[in-house]
Length: 404
Image (cartoon, rainbow, N blue to C red; front, side, top):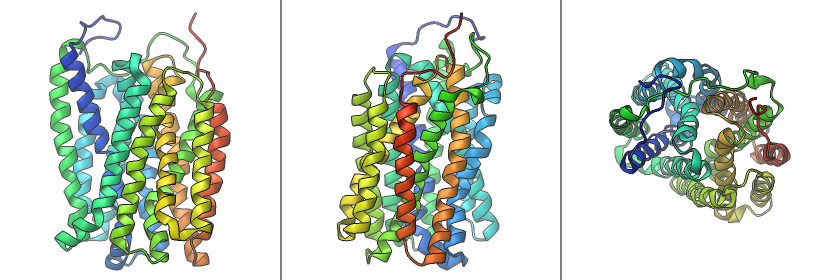
């Protein structure tokens, strides 16, 4: 491993492209194990006896793992390197997917915990890897890998019911997603070998600059709030939108493909957001409009529910735009790779702790009221808050003052 402060040789274009490919394959692993659950909640509940509240908790467990694990990633990464930690995370993710699919409640819950822990590590470290290896094209690369994440999430939702129908079992339909992190682990291992000579395995270690805690930065808290509200709306939709559609008479397979459409539109919107961001440092307008679009989608679901596919598409525009922006802000609001990793860990800790409450609250609201209207109102309120805080997080500011 190249020591901190040494000057590595420049990577070749081929090596850089292979490194980017590895990042994209890892990104593709980070959402299907979660989004594939939503369309299958009816089958899972019928098989396990879990009610709406219990299923909401099941959907929230990965988010709790994100919140618990995220703030602890930076120090191990500084010691062992992002290359090794992401490789281990992929192994944990694959094992968790398989364990979750075993019969028995203990395996369902413990596997879900392992899935959340594995994803949390990659969630935190990928923005720092991108900041380090693609600093000159930060917004572009962030947009691409975020869009890949979104597209894979949509694929997980869209294929969930067809896979369950084809295999005759929701457990097998979830287990097949273990293949993807296994492939990603192989590619990531080869990436480490290819980039060893240019110190690509160097961790996002502390660099020269201010030592002030990220937790004392107002800008960091603004980014954290924006990321948290964005994640809350996203996980509310991917967990419960199929159930909302079921209450409108939409069959499970169609609802799953509507969720897929929601994610696919998010890909296009995310790439569009990347173009709009360009090299500009001020992203206030994009943040405000992104949240406002989701308010329109929720209003449409409440007032004209027959056009549910249209509103799912509109919601996808919002989610894709704001997700890419949230990921980009980790790098845009920090000066060094170390700060990016720290901000990513902080924002994902607090942000996912907030997001975790969404699916649980939605399940409780439905159990109490017997209608999805309060849940949709909750999503709209979060979207309004997202726009408001985005007006601050999107400003051209840094979490730390310049050194010297």
